[in-house]
Image (cartoon, rainbow, N blue to C red; front, side, top):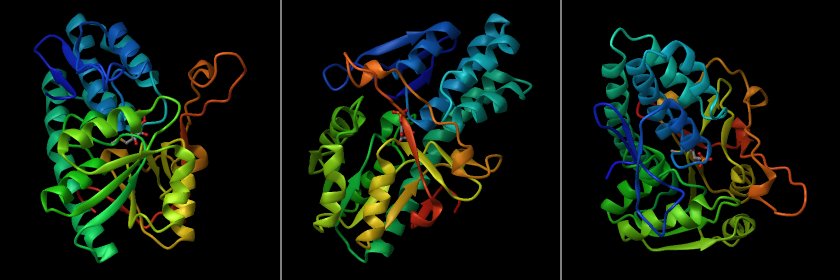
Length: 301
Ligand code: MRU
């Protein structure tokens, strides 16, 4: 089952809010339904958000409301540049539905290339045939049309019998790690253990992993990387303990228009996701400075 797909006149997604308990499909027939699904993270992850944006324009185009709806779709979530990129690409096309479907199919292809290239890179950087990996959030098939980026690298390594174990950060507050990444690894048959976010740097310090592999929501022109809140401490720990910190992402996540990480808009979500009773500050992403990133691997570089 694809995470997101087009069915001629509507969008179908896996409702990620229901995983890992239920694998439920959701039909989105209006732009309002799509925006609501994006905002409550029923569909999420930068590449999947890009495809959602493209298909959202196709949906709006059929209703004759594309000009009014495109800016609303772009604003649904601010940090993943793939969303705005795909809306702009689709709006500019003569045949918007065809362009949206191209973006959908390209995502599936691209992520396989990212994954194979990433697997080669990880073997080169670690010098190991079987690696122990730490990952954060979910950059798997559920974050894309299929296959995945950071978790796609794990999958490609696994196909070469190259994974010893994966440590999965829980990823507070919405648990993309313990709900989604763990579910995917379980289905893949990869050995894994879930850790609380605060344990990630300790796992690195104790020498329990060979490499950190994460995805990205936006990579600024200077190489700073925005990804799920809690990524930056892993990069600091990887640097301190001398293991590679690898970012796997499609080229559509690179944003030459945004100069540095300081210019990346970081989404702030409701405090109610963190606590019921007190005020909370709930930034959804952080920015890892370029000098802490060992390598960014895409389908092309
Ligand atoms: O808030 P989310 O779940 O959309 O955040 C997702 C991430 O931070 C992913 O790591 C990123 O989008 C890359 S997905 C291939």
